[in-house]
Image (tube, rainbow, N blue to C red):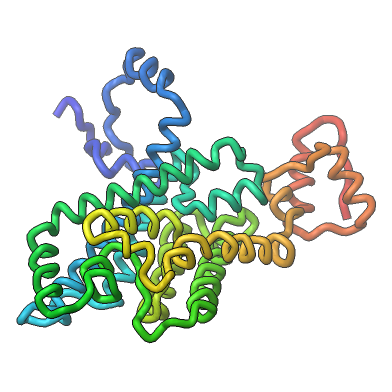
Length: 351
């Protein structure tokens, strides 16, 4: 009774909402200097890389686990409908992405995709020296997710492997054991241009949604809803195109494809010469999508007006731009007026 007073909540998930309710949460124990020193001594690059790896793991692991449930139980006497569907798989990836962003984005920025990391470097000034570290970490996270799933489903996968070989079917093919971990095209999908187009379109669709969600001037996406909106963008593409082969993420495909190659042979990379499409198309597609948004849909003056960016030449450069262009959007005008009113000097009416 000494810990909890009349209007205080116990420590736990309540800490996340203490700023949004009138009741307060009982205070945690004081933070020790030893803990602060330890946290300060941690290398930032290591924290960021581990956050990227963990985020990709959170995204890939539930997704491929759902694929495993769907694929392995297809041969079960009860039938696949009792265990999974493409609808379930889409939600598994979507919610995994949301969990990844919520859990790890505060530490690393939440890229979880080599193409997104490259786009941040191209369009937003993310340091190029960090790009290789982030990409390797993302691939590592997917690789660990594949290894762990292999261990957890070892008995079932080995039984499925034996049954597949006994039936004379290949291990590496769509619907085979290797397809639990990465994407393979259907046997009738021999047209590489067709597969390229599907992957390019799907990845571009996702890329535009991601860039729109991350636009600080977008009034329709709150920070709390962005993880789920991005996740649902992935889900709808899974629901629409998983039946005709999509990858959507270099790290997700390459990391788990390495696991498939370890346990089912190098054909995981050579089957129908599809792996380069699954692994690499995501990068130009996402660059195209984000470039489309940057050149045609981005409104940087609104971003500046909302206080999320500054002019490269500071306030004076912004004023020159205003003078040259004459009229600003209401949102930017209001923000600049507010900023100006807080300073004794430099007050100015903006039309």
